[in-house]
Amino acid sequence: MLKLSNISKTFNLGTINEKKALQNISLTVNDGDFITIIGGNGAGKSTLLNTIAGVYSIDCGHIYLDNNDVSLKGEHEIAANIGRVFQDPMMGTATNLEIIENLALANRRGKRRTLAWGIKASEKQQYHEVLKRLGLGLENRMTSKVGLLSGGQRQALTLLMATLQKPKILLLDEHTAALDPVTAKKVLELTEEIVAEQNLTALMVTHNMKDAIAIGNRLIMMNQGQIVYDVSGEEKMNLTVEDLLRKFEEVSHESFANDRMLLVD
Amino acid sequence: MPFLLAIQSAVGQGILWGIMALGVFITFRLLDIADLTVDGSFATGGAVCAVALTSGINPFVAILMATVSGFIAGGITGILHTKFDIPAILAGILSQIGLYSINLRIMGRSNIPLLNTPNLFKDFPIGGLSNNWIVLIIGLVIAVVIIMISYWFFGTELGSAIRATGNNEKMVRSLGVNTNSTKIIGLMISNGLIALSGGLVTQAQGYADIKMGIGAIVMALASIVIGEVLISKGTNFMVTLAAIISGSIIYRIIITLVLQAGLSTDDLKLFTAILVAVALAIPTYLAKRRQVTTYKKMTKELEDAETK
Image 1 (tube, each protein chain N blue to C red):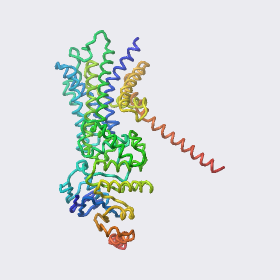
Image 2 (cartoon, chains in turn brown, green):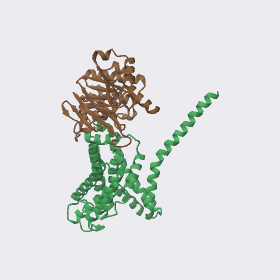
Image 3 (tube, chains in turn yellow, purple):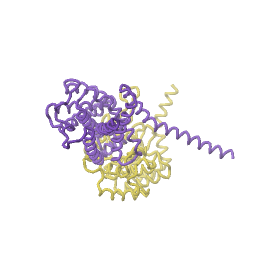
Image 4 (cartoon, rainbow over the protein chains, first blue to last red):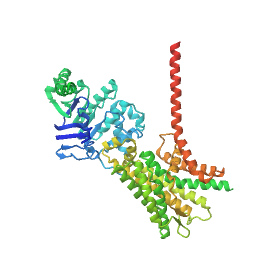
């Protein structure tokens, strides 16, 4: 279980560029939750994920993972429990290393790196199997450098790497946004499959409202660094894109009004 | 045959200095860090080795001590760079400049001749060989051992993590690797090899000098660049390492040739700098030219098709 209590994050604190990215966020993610996160640009979606992953240090508040306080843990310390797929397909894999080397690195996520051989013979069969299910033929190119793969292939590989060693939380930051529609659909299907199969707890940021409604059991809308809508179960399933848009206008109205007032003044 | 002897000597020197180039390769190519500690740590290796030898320490142990001094020098650069966020180039320069004074302190003066001390090369067990041959044999054995160990190490979990750090730091951190540690370890190993090479060169030439490390980084880059021209990108790691040693040998031969042809030793550093700059620039220049030609070709085809 992941619990955020009253966390805030401000960029460029105390300068003229001060930006409150997260404001007093409290959120409890139950085991097995698959949450989709929507919201406008700058709403704080990515910041929220990066905060959970320990990339950003928070201003205040607490983050508990399975009742352990991980608020001040650094990125690599908390990584043992967290699988991540980034928006940019280039981010999740190491270009000059082989496919199998990338998988082996991921399989040791959060573990001590020793002087044991980087890839054990027994792992090769396992990697062959997991690559095969992607249906991209990568199992026959295991010693190819990742740089030779397309963006979609790399993203599918990153997803595999993120879940090779079961993470307590899977963070997906618009992981299909940079892909063409067909590839995006494939990667999304693969995501649902893997999450269901391993019964993972996942948070997925998306700009696609349809996906946000169709996927997962819970939906969160963010605006100006706050969670403005949190819906799950039956209520979420019955949502329509129009409902979301209306809700979106409703919450952002105030800020629009404020902007207008500024202009009129 | 003075010319052949000069070439033979160049090959031996190339191997000894090639080990230094292997060290630079670890930071420059694998970690993607331009580490300038080199010029300092190479001389540190020489200084530690020379002082150890004059104190009567076994020449082999003296080499190991030199290596450890390199580990420490690299570690300091690593800590400055990672823990205190000092840019890598600056951290390296700080170490390099600091090491100049430290090297003088270690040596006590600016030059230590090694006339009557034990010596790996002078005490070679097989008699009747010329000094050039001995340098060649010892250099080759040590180089092969180092290449084997490097091949093993960079295939381990830790070694893979170090290689990946130079590739995609963010990804490696997200996989739970402390990239500060991998960088520090990489810098330590790199400077360890550099200092080891410094110790070997000191024993081979029979003296240590405070200025022996000046320009070492450029020689290493020359070796790496020449070595990479020899092989295609993406070949086996062991071949890459061997190619760098070969690159160092070729560099020494080129230097010998231009000196024989009448180049003044005063101009040697400028020659090396130009050699490296040209070698680094050529691939980029060719790629750009290729792009322009393809663009022109494809545009022309397109226009031709339209006019038809």
